[in-house]
Length: 254
Image 1 (cartoon, one colour):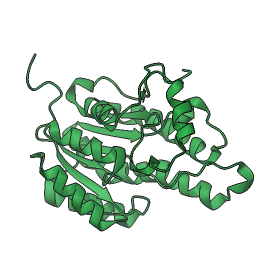
Image 2: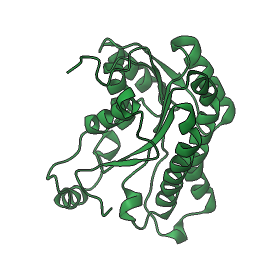
Image 3: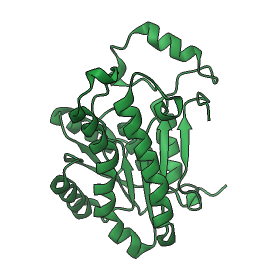
C-alpha cells in the first residue's frame, strides 16, 4: 500500500470551532495527514493558545485564528489571515456550534432558532463564498459540514437544533451538485453522541441509556470523527459528494 494513501501534503485546511472537542481532533487528524491547518476559536483565548501548542507538538504546521464564523466581515478576515499564514484554502471543515439546550418549542424564541440557522446554514454559506474562488481555479476543493445524528433520529424536544441541522444537510446536497463540475466535493459527517469536554456534566443515567442503544457496543471517540473527516478530505474521496456519513456505531434508522 502506498505511503501516500489519503495524504494531504501540500493542502491547506480550515477547521472552524477547533480549539476544543471534536473540532480539535479533526484538526489533528488533518495535520497528521500532512495538511497545514488553520484552527479557529471565538471565546477563551487561553484555551486556544494551549490547543495550538499541543497541535504544533505533533509536528504539524498550523495557526489559530479568532473569528465569529456567523459574521461576514470576520469570515473574510479569517480566510485572508489563513491565506497569509498557510496558503489558499483547499479544505473547509464547518464545525463551529453554539450551546444546544433541549427544550419544548414553547420555550424557544425565534432568536434562538435564528442562531441555529446562522451557525449551520449562514456560516457554511459565508465560508464557501469566501473560499470557492481559488478552489475553482485549482479545480480541487473539499467542503465538509459537521452535522449530527439528531437529524436522522428525529431527537425531541430539540426542534431548533434538529431543523437547522436538516437545513445544513440539504445545503450540502444542493452545493455538491453545483460544485461537482469544478472538482469540489461537498459532504457531511454526522457524529453520534461522542463525549468531549462539553459533556462532563451530563447525567450519567443519560450516558448509560445512550450507550445501550449503540449497536457497536462502545462509545465513539473524537478520533473516529477526525479520521472520517480526513478521508472525505482526501484525493481518494474525489468521486464521493453530496453524501452524509454517520459516525455513531450504527445508531441510525436510515
